[in-house]
Amino acid sequence: MQLPVINNPVAEAPSGGCSAGSCGSTDDQMGHLPEHIREKVFNHPCYSEEAHHYFARMHVAVAPACNIQCNYCNRKYDCANESRPGVVSELHHPVQAVKKVLAVAATIPQMTVLGIAGPGDPLANPQRTFETFRMLSEQAPDIKLCVSTNGLSLPDNIDELSKYNIDHVTITINCVDPDVGAQIYPWIFWKNKRIKGREGAAILIERQQKGLEMLVAKGILVKVNSVLIPGVNDKHLAEVSRIVKAKGAFLHNVMPLISEAAHGTYYGLTGQRGPTNEELQALQDECSGDMNMMRHCRQCRADAVGLLGEDRGSEFTMDKIEAMDINYPEAMKMRAEVHAAINEELESKRIAKESKVQLVSIQGLKPKVAKTRPVLMAIATKGGGVINEHFGHAGEFLIYEASSAGVRFIGHRKTTPYCEGGDTCGDGESALDVTLRVLAGCEAVLCSKVGYEPWGPLEAAGIQPNGEHAMEPIEDAIVAVYEEMRVAGKLAMKKVELQKVA
Amino acid sequence: MALEIIESCVNCWACEPLCPSKAIFEAKPHFLIDANKCTECAGDFEDPQCATICPIEGAILNENGIPLNPPGSLTGIPLQKLAA
Image 1 (cartoon, chains in turn brown, purple):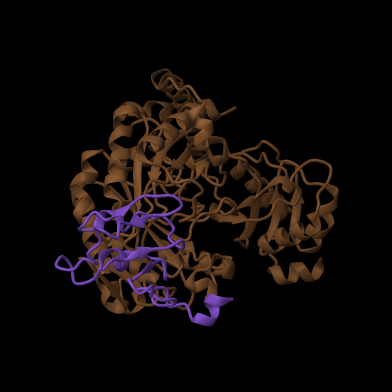
Image 2: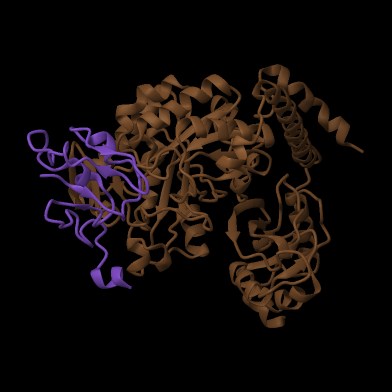
């Protein structure tokens, strides 16, 4: 094995002033960030693509009031069966919220981040929001705090925000042009008046930009969320991306509009559609030339609990929490051990990755083969960065693109699990149709196991089922499958030709 | 002279801190306005504050029982779509 030789220079690197766990990796979205920012975000599941496989987050719903109306939001928000922003089942007072956070943090030690995201706007409920943050920074100093806002009240709350060491703020910025804004925001509440249309949108935009500048000046990290609304701001978001980057936002997250008539929103009821997977990816690619894009956002509920993509909120309802006896100082010790173990794992993966890169560069191994065409692959995973989910149990798939340039993460796509487990699959047939539609464009699906029944329909749809890489790291498995495809001569052909052959 | 909150209220708390007369209070199943305290913001603000921030059309009535924010006035959703 040549790896130990290659490893030596890497092992010495940290003594040169680089802190463990946050330097080196260049192929994920954290790669280009300055060291002090990466140090803050490497274990934040919402900011780090790698961290989201390992660390968990939760939101507490303490902020019901809002000071604006968005056309994608319906304020009658109570719903237990949906996963989307602005939806919660149980509203909490700050004292209850803190109890819930401590219970979750003690039960799910991977939980590193607590966010307040609604169901209204956290900064339109400053007392409840800051009361929660104040108690948490005292009682649970090992939990990172963050907050999402529409930005209208942001400039008034910067000092308060910096008081509680909230070093991550997300601002939803859908536009920088009031004419576009007038199609997204019907009204804002401003200085004791309801201001409608373009005038309201103009004030909101001005406050968002001012808030962004003030946060950056204070050294508080800012992520910008944008909702992609086809026909409204799709042509406009590249400019938004350029401007927020220039002002110092460290990450831009373009999310697809969620719009269904059943949600009762303006967009849902008037037939405004959300973007297709392809439109979203195209826009994210367009913006990525300007700044770091985030592609693993799951558009969580305002009371979400657990790893991204999972929601364990039902384990922590208020009556269940009241019955729990939490000794947080004890829990903190256990949490520290769990975090150290995860960090060690991340660090060893990073070193292994670097070794591979160096191995290639030292031996001067340049791929002799001609450029191969890019291929999309779908991955079923429960977390941990490995392929460890059955095809039929996957509620979502991670989508990666393999090409001669390497492997890159594209995003995630939700589906209805083909089979919820157990002996009966109920209407499994139609669930499979959903999955086939969701996986359109992918040429392989890698999971820990694929059943006999979906195998045929997947193949017929041009998606090769593959259960041969169970428990392997996602990227390694993709590289292996891509290489198999290359050897089999499948990568020189255009996809249409491939389908004709099949 | 007093406003009234009715059952379509979603308990979002937006109005409560704005009331200059402290007439709004939390109640089950929804927030209420103390008719003895409510001044409709006369002398304090141009517009009654609760009805100015309330996001729910029809949730706040004037003394004649007429909604201050009639259906469609806040969301812009066409009436025939609202009914559906």
